[in-house]
Image (tube, rainbow, N blue to C red; front, top):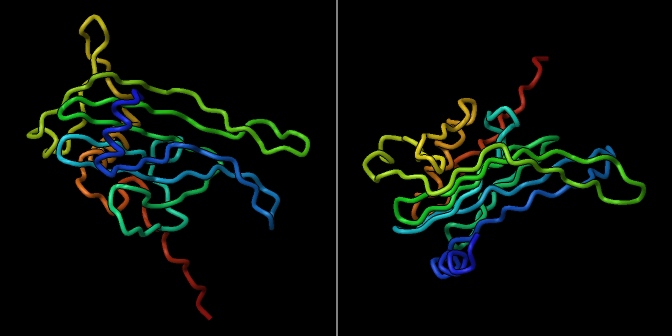
Length: 187
């Protein structure tokens, strides 16, 4: 992302943590991916990253993060594989990156690497405020002017992140959902 855009986001108080890390669970010795849903918007600028199952389905958050300031971190999730949907907005112009993340091979006495692959990249998509209020996603084009459709299985995830990148002073999650309460066995 261009430095002037990042400075403008910082000036607007919008913080987005995009890094996915490999973490080892001490009790089980199992490796997982950890990610933080974050972001928000002001009237004319925004950035948001949400995390989903690799299929595009919503994931539960591990913990919700409450902060004094808005448009920052919202919740943490851990999973074996993740799909990140990251979007930046300047007025009615949108940038979109969908990436798949998985754990790399086990390495002796080292943290496992995170392997990431771009699934879809949308540049300079357009979405008017009127269409945004209808719950639509930005429309992206290739250099020849043809529509580059978002892969169908990720449209709902992109719609949710579009809501996040336009959520002024955002203080809640748009992608991750509350973990269902455990069902207790009848005695």
